[in-house]
Length: 120
Image (cartoon, rainbow, N blue to C red):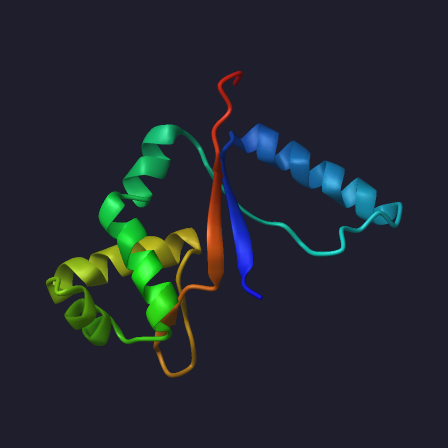
């Protein structure tokens, strides 16, 4: 079974408060059965800068294809190596793509769940 990752827009104070609350719950013994993987962005503009349509397509194809090198991925996507390399750097920095010891890339997430609050 593959994991999900939840993406949200939250400021530093909100995400820090969520961490503190999770810590308090863990101290009480209230630990979730499965950890919830989360990725926070400061604002919608930053989220959309990282998760462009081309990068989402790259994530989907890499997930389905399995571990690949950047060169193999660029050939598979029929895209320029340099552009794929830049996209991979951004996605690695965000924590959405991982390298193994053989330096091949993979996506562990079966779903990316985005949550945007209108009340914030």
